[in-house]
Length: 191
Image (cartoon, rainbow, N blue to C red):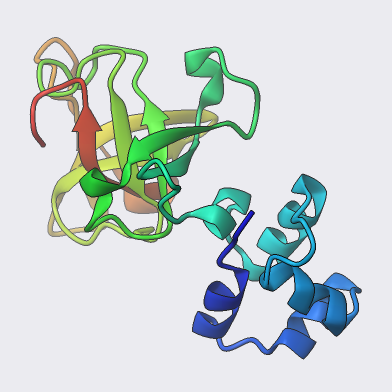
């Protein structure tokens, strides 16, 4: 199975020698894994991904022969999938989606009618800050939620639901953790 370890490693400016040392692996074995001469086992993929600070699925985030890309599901339990699951997405739909994309399964009506319960939302996990008004995946306390953020002129942010029956909140921006920004939703109206 092919992988893109070498490409990601080079993009991060890490030599094969440096990565092999981080992994406590011989440079020869790492080179063979990068070139597909040794099969990339799941446990090795997890170690390499951790060393590169990326998702294990990002190591194989390239179109397969059937024209799909596997994306991690951030909340696989919402789809009754096992942990660390991924779903295939047609590559033609992802031309402008960054490598660090993942899926979030919407399980409530807070963003209805625009994003319905049961929709899959592609999240750009490279966006960790509020860069402009938009829909973001947030961690607030122990909860992971999809909400519309609206910038204010202070240290607060407005957290809005598209569903009119939910009350808007204004909270300190430092009390939220932005996981990523929503860029595309399946099974709902366009963002």
